[in-house]
Image (cartoon, rainbow, N blue to C red; front, top):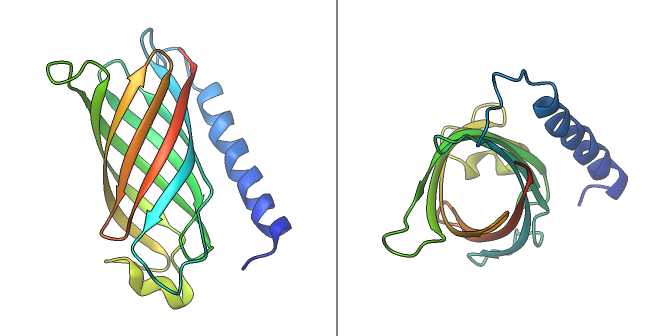
Length: 166
């Protein structure tokens, strides 16, 4: 497992960039009705494997546009203990006809961090970069939300989030 200080240095660098980017955006880019949503990974369930290193630490920042388009950056330790990132764009569909707080999301983007002996764990991985499509289902009440994210055929991630800017 990577040293704690090495891991923290990467986390702090990426989190600083993720927080700084929205604050530097022009007023035209962030419109009335848009939200910045911060998520933290709470629990993950993996298909059994002796290679998994334990629960990943996940932080995610996401711009939710009034049009339900979303743009985000996830920072996490993957299931093999390596620092990884997911930069994405996606769409959210609210389903009030089924249950008012219910929504589904579908995101697509670039995943980075599966290298070395784990490079073959992602399809189309080239130098640690691979395309990814990630679906989720969740509930939102006020500024709080929770999501269940499908991680390919390997696991499920439970997150909790909060709209830090409305």
